[in-house]
Amino acid sequence: MAGRVERANSASRLGTPLPLVGSYLSKWGLPVIIGIGIIFPHVAGNYWIDVAVFWGIYVLLGLSLNIIVGEVGLFNMGHSAFFAIGAYTTAILSERFGVSLWLLLPLSGLAAGVAGYILAKPIIHLRGDYLLIVTIGLNEIIRITLLNNPLGLTGGPNGIIMLDQFRIFGHAIERPMDFYYLVWAFVAITVFVLIRIQRSRIGRCWNYVREDEIAAQAMGIDTRWAKLIAFTLGAAIAGATGTVFAAKLVVISPESFTFMESVILFCIVILGGMGSIPGVILGSAGMMVLPELLRNFAQFRMLFFGLALVLMMIFRPQGLWPSRRWTTILREGEGE
Amino acid sequence: MALFIEQLVNGLTVGAVYSLVALGYTMVYGVMRMINFAHGDFFMIGSYLGFTLVSSALLGGAIPLWAALIVVVVLSMAGVALLGVIVERAAYRPLRRSSRLTAVVSAIGVSIFLQNAVMLIWGPRYRAYPPWSVPSITWQVGGIYINFMQVLILAVSFGLMVALYLFVQRTTVGAAIRATAIDHDTARLMGIDVDQIIRLIFLIGPALGAAAGVLLGLYYRQIHFTVGWTYGLKAFTAAIMGGIGNIPGAMVGGLLLGILEMLGAGYISSAWKDVFVFLILILLLMFRPTGLLGERIAEKV
Image (cartoon, rainbow over all chains, first blue to last red):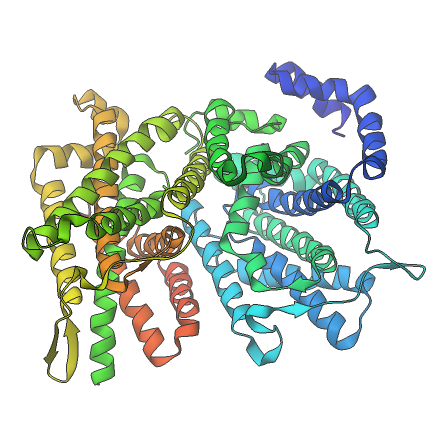
């Protein structure tokens, strides 16, 4: 999954058990995991396939937020707004104009990306916690707007029913198993692209801005531009994921895009390890699959879940699978 | 004009509650540079404790109503203050040295835990304060109506805010709080027990939140285990509006937010009032990036 250089460094520099697991993964892990992934829907029941589908959707969302929070260190706690823009763009255009979902995938990404750019432009200079509350505010503004059914477009609290599905050569993707392969194919593509970006010039710029904005500026990086690119790209990926989500859920309503949803995405990034792609995959498993596994405890499960979040932060603050570059921040201590 | 003044009074009432809750956010932020996402839940638990106390035999008529109300408010404040200290010890102190985002996620964990604990104890449905818990007196002053609860909320919250202001400003302990807010290490060198100060902050903040919770419960009657997030978000917005870490800022921010919200509800529409509030917040931060009164807890006070 991660590249050779990165793996070697993470294993030798951190010396913690998980990156070591990472270096084992390099030889046998990846083929084995892909193999298990392909066989999984043939042995699991539909319920667990669906859990895996939603896990995949949250991996995509987590990856998109990871660009903003993890790579650049911008506190964005309103990410589900962009997800909502993508899902609603898909549902409205598909129901009214019968646009194909394959076309809507990039269109929704574009819509959310443009919205992300326009919304982030005037506020991107805000420092940490101020940016946090403003993004929460944007999330609420968009959710309430959807709820109030402007121009009769969004269907108010009931939302929109979208009947179209992804089609491959006329075959509609609607069984859980088909969806599973579709979603995880998207995950694989996104992960591949993001790893390339992480190692590119802009990827290193982002990390530089996160670690020390003033030094980055002094080295000639246009930090404002770097932040805006991250915000726009993150929003666009979340928007495109909205299309997949709309196809899976059929009913698109404002309650899927609450502040709580943004908080979950935020937790995924921190829980996994900021700026770490395998971390996001593990983090979303923690946030999505763990509550399902705790189902036996019935009404106590969210209680345990809250407790688990606290314990995780106390005993593994760097995240489940920390990125190599994250360690420098930890050494500084308070991370002011 | 009557509508304007009426909405102003309504806004002040709600705003006073926001201010009390915002103080908890701002004090924790001032001293620890941390957003306590569980603070709204302290507020919510306060209103549930108040609900249980009010519904219990306490208000059966054995003691006069005003005394019973004081007992209810004080007991709820004490209970939630104790909870606040426990939460700080268990979930926040181990994270004092780690990154700020880690502490935020831990606070979110605490919040989920508390909400679900309340749901298990008091049930998932709306609970309502009994109608006889406060006298339903309404006065008519110059064409507008003011009821007993509004007066009570304004009196109690302004009383608490003035007391807090004087405490932070005029006492030795208050000076220690202000010193800790500026610099932990220097404060420690001056002989201040920083842990003790943080514990004190987690005693005062949740207690104020609990008082707000009881007052709001008595005002609107209906309570639910999710109100902590709704009001917590508003109060946090208020704290940011005033300049986070700044105690008078939280008071001003809360009142301003309440008034804006009620004017928005009166003149625009109640469905869009929150959009209006957040738009103002965004505009404000675009032009004054550290809030109305600026950020620092100490010098400005």
